[in-house]
Image (cartoon, rainbow, N blue to C red; front, side):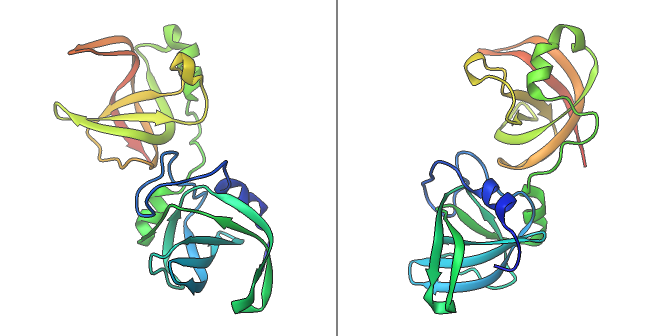
Length: 217
């Protein structure tokens, strides 16, 4: 380890993970910044990778995807082991995160899927619902991870989540109607018009909907 990795470790660690290595994990990719491979130890069905996000590095063990030094990778969340020997490198890592979901990507994809800081002026999703009566009909800037994307009637319907809100009250998920192309798991900001109590027919009803969403970089 060449630098402290606690913030990076916190982003990657969760209560567990599962699923095919090349599929996006249910909770989305955990990269806090574009992530590059600094070192590789091949272990047959698995690879041990030293990865870097900005100035931070840590070791992760992932299913083998043929990653090489210099590659960009997307990583899901995993579980950490402390004080782990790596005999192939004659060292002991302070921690290794076991991760089941990994994907080798190009630099642009790594940038798009890294969590970003919410842009100035964006409204948390929980606040959108709490202030819906007052804000309805006005322009609004929202930011979150595209938890789900559906394409219908000439639009993309992007379900944004930012970690705020109450899932049991369905105030954690805000749909944006847009003609922009968005991938599930991507962090993105949209500006559009907030509508309340929108009934599209065919069983589609939204307590809150952002119409005409345009992406804000």
